[in-house]
Image (cartoon, rainbow, N blue to C red; front, top):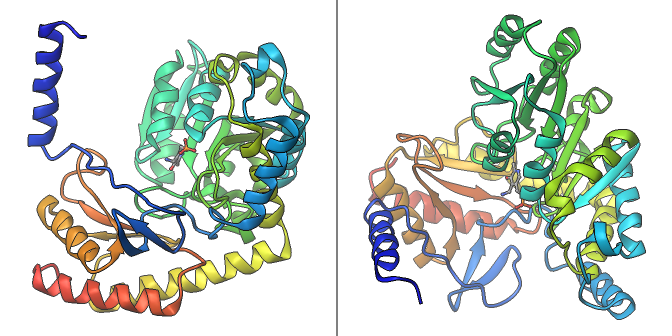
Length: 396
Ligand code: PMP
């Protein structure tokens, strides 16, 4: 039992979170996640998951997991670095390299562990990290764990990045430019062509977290492929937890870099990986995404996303700068964003309200993630509900 003063202190802090509206009321899913799901006992059209290609409940992923568990058992046994890993992990890492079009690949337990583990291995005291203003929290935490200096450049602002590169030139041992490929709250795309050109000019390392670009852009190969700059990106980071329908993180790069990361990233060295079942499902997911079927799923995903975004705009909603299936409906008011999400949930549509501190004040929103598995009927039903509640709540 905790000491009285400890319980009181954190009880008070918890109450403050509740009062500030920063307490997460986490919903329970009572079945698989897909374009439809049973949430808190209610059937809903799902817009809250990153299941872009509708692979999270794919029979082939489940079958691959079952077969691997039969062959290798459930538990990994120990930290891979100490006790070794099942041979299927090597197969997955080869597939990661093929997917990222790099020489070598490494698998991490999660995308978060990938960023917090990899970034501090690449930079140290005397180095500079130039980081996009809207980069994901796992990048921010990875930067904090490194001993490098950090300067934030304005979101997707190439002129600002160049200005900062020019001022930093010659003052640091090395410079790392780090950016999301697709931004996780706005669905806009990093200008990787310009960024990689600048990086070449200033001899900087480029690190791209493509969590929301893989399986979505570049016929599924991601944001670097979308811009045709795969070979200009030094570090290709990604995660299995979005379009790939699973969980786990990855890095693709040159062999020496990958083996250096494997031998120095603390989140790889000190943490036990997932079950062999998850490794096998990830391998299957990559095979599907790289196949002709994967390309067809990507095509359907964009057809759905483009329709949904355009219709939301014509109803009068602000979808910001989204160009991807991650579509925000920007409201600019915490109460209304929450009320809208609640009203939609009551109508059988699950979208998430995103408020400060996850996004800046004044840009509170609902976050809508379209899937290749949504039908036109799902989208139309959702659009009708958005229009009804948008008018009732005075948003449009
Ligand atoms: N990077 C970005 C851009 C993300 O959106 C996420 C997902 N929350 C992560 C990293 C972390 O990935 P994971 O959920 O697999 O830990």
